Amino acid sequence: MENIHLIAVGGSIMHNLALALHRRGAHVTGSDDEIFEPARARLAAAGLLPPSEGWDAARITPDLSAVIVGMHARPDNPELARAQELGLKIYSFPEYIYEASKDKQRVVIGGSHGKTSITALILHVLRFHGRKFDYAVGAQLAGFDLMVQLTDDAPIIIIEGDEYLSSPIDRRPKFHLYQHHIGVISGISWDHINVFPTEEIYREQFEIFARQTPKAGVLIYDRDDEQTQLVAVPTSPDVRYVGYGPHENIIRDGQTFLVTKKDEEVPIQIFGEHNLRNISAAKEVCKQLGIKGKDFYKAVATFKGAARRLELVQAGATSVVYKDFAHAPSKLRATARALKQQFPARRLVACLELHTFSSLNPAFLPQYAHCFDAPDVAVVYFNPHVLEHKRLPPLAPEQVAAAFARPDLRVFTDSRALAAFLHEQQWANANLLLMTSGTFDGLDLPALAAEVVG
Image (cartoon, helix red, strand yellow):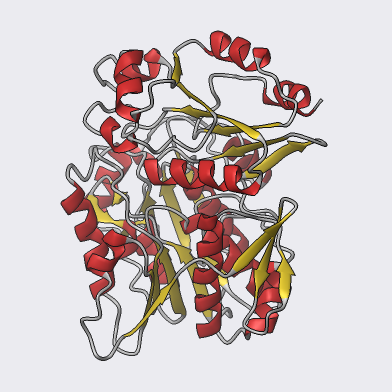
């Protein structure tokens, strides 16, 4: 039996890995200095919740088969130091996923945007058709109780390939370590400025990923993305390069239909050009895995979307409320355009919370220029205390408005003032879009959504 200890087990993906290993039959222990919900309850239900919070080198014993260290741990973590002293096998999350899937066909979905949605689409199609597969995805998906699954008999694994760092002692991007057979680059838009200080350094990580495609491997890429074109150029005669664009479609009465090569119309439950591109990427991957076109469409018609990705909160006769995880410029532009194009006759009020390190960094803010032009009313919110927590310099609302290059942009730094502004809006024949990786500091979304839809 494997005896595995996870340092920083409370993380989103790390606690899911702990649960997956436990389900596979391993003896699992873990530690963390803070464990929040839902990780705390889920670990407790499986009997894996550490007896106390904090680090203790005594937990690291010579009989451990492996130690897996999460990004939340520091390089000088005492448990990590003890594992190094004992010469134990130490893995980052991506290293361990590769180790557990060395004998499987590995599909890795990379890109600055769309990774979760493309991965979710592929998993949905495979499950719809009863295929055996393992997976590792960065979000909780509807119908999947874990974000990680590792089994002995699945012949393939589908991995969402994050470009962020692997661990506190391994500065390589995660998606470099999976060693894909089938790779996807959904688009490249500079992000993670704290790790990749220039656009060129960031793009280079995708160049490395593209070059890692092995002989007889496949690289699937967005053929219309300028940055992706720079890294996905065919450089090996032994690799198959497949470019894709948005799936052919029509919109009728707020409903999107895919148009197949046989001119058949397939109604789908998601919309927007970015999602039509995600569908094309997923279709190309599924084709490589032996899923025929008609079977793909049958499955995709039942796909409701990935959680927190352009997710419907509430719908009424003349209004809808959506929320989205979008925060990077490319995601912001795509999501706002999608909702405006889906309901062109309705007024769109869109609110963005600047919450990540990159989005609040004055050096990165100019990347948002004209990304928020689609909404009729554009609102940006940020909490000055978050800037202090991230050790960033103060931001003036005027700086933010100038960066977005939209003179009528409304900028709020008080969540109560933001809520009051939204309550004052006229919601007849109008839609609301809320975009954040945070919570707008406790905005009562259900109450607001009920007011919007009447």
